[in-house]
Image 1 (spheres, rainbow, N blue to C red):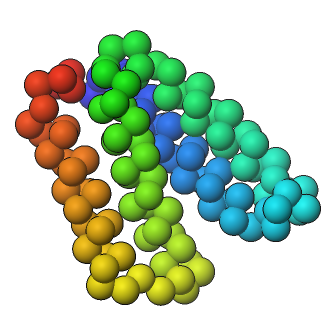
Image 2: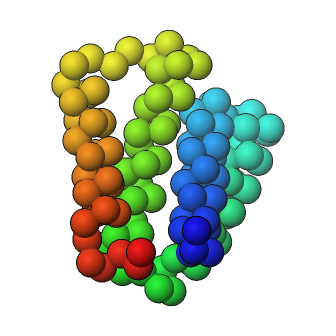
Amino acid sequence: MAKHILFLLAAIVAEVIATTALARSESFTRLGPSLVTVAGYAIAFWCLSFPLRVMPTGVVYAVWSGMGIVLISAIAWAWYGQALDFAALLGLGLILLGVIIVNLFSKTVGH
């Protein structure tokens, strides 16, 4: 797998961790989750800078944000019991489908 794809995956993981911690930081009043949030976003943006060297910004951002939305929603549902109705599941499915289509069929993504 190309190095830029690995950095994009690392950026997604770091962003998901940071956003999950942000929800637990209670508006940055809890030190531990607040530190995880800041560090996670810093790592995410650093990792995101590498695929931006070789891939179009729109594609990188679409994959990063789309996968982040889907993964954060899945974590919130599985670990924290947050409900997802049919419309939410349909929307998340369409986001995931969009990421898959961009990666499989777009000629702007380096394969």
